[in-house]
Image (tube, rainbow, N blue to C red):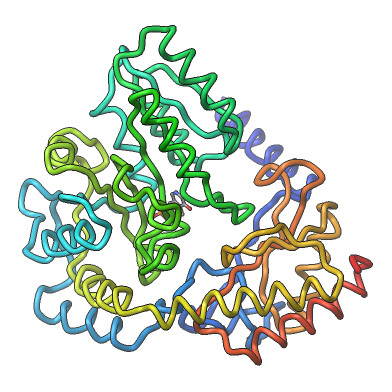
Length: 400
Ligand SMILES: *Cc1c(COP(=O)(O)O)cnc(C)c1O
């Protein structure tokens, strides 16, 4: 029986390999940044990085690193406790208050990751009398969180407001007590921004709550980095906002939920990934306080990020590449064929540009792409160098 188990594992791995879906992790030997050192075929090479979630370029910021170090000196390394036993420091509460304040909420609650925040948010707040109406392209962690909750599930086609209306009507017909509409603020495979203005108008019409997972927007979208709801002019209408410290906000780790202070207090009492998992480390929190300060003063970084996105978009379009339209610093270069997308990423690595090919099941069949992501720390020269590399690799692989 045990033999049968291990041979099944081998067969599954062989199957992944055969379908070209096996993920091999490259090893980086430098800090995360616009230019990194990676191990490539046994050699260390320096390459431009165009696939990190390091939108504001803060992952290796010297002031953040210094804040982490000095906090570690003051508070030590680990908490060795969940929050409610002896894992809450003044730093935890300061970070929670700062995040809530920045995003315009009464309070927030920290988790080890946004994956945990989304995994823990639904079950304590909704029961079997309630309805969750979820966008079809929502992040895996939302899908898992919804599964853990007893509420009835409804799914609407990605950003399709007619379908959302239909699902809301169905939830009403089914006698839902509370309806919660859930969406990503930005859909990460395409860089498309959710139609939050229209979504909130429908929520008003149907007296529904709104939850937004803003992992790919907080810190850089919106007038001062408050995210996709502010970008769409509906920041005040979003009841529950989840996000990550692992992307634009320094790229360390940790997640959070913003809501009213009562909702947050109930989550502290009932959210399982919070109750049964270790508290975040002090160094991370000290670094996050510095990060939030830099993000609040980050209009210059945001401007640079979108300038870089525009520069890349304009030159790549001019060169004949097929880009998904938009304004977000996620810029997918459509290749369509999965094998070609893989070849393209490999050819770009030879040209000193690190990007990743995405194919099924992460994106639909025949919609393979190179998902590029811009960073405020990229210089004009680095953006131009990436475009030159794309042109050379694109001709080699037969994409342009
Ligand atoms: C990255 C991401 C997450 C997970 O965040 P972690 O903090 O890395 O767990 C959740 N939702 C969305 C939309 C994301 O992009």
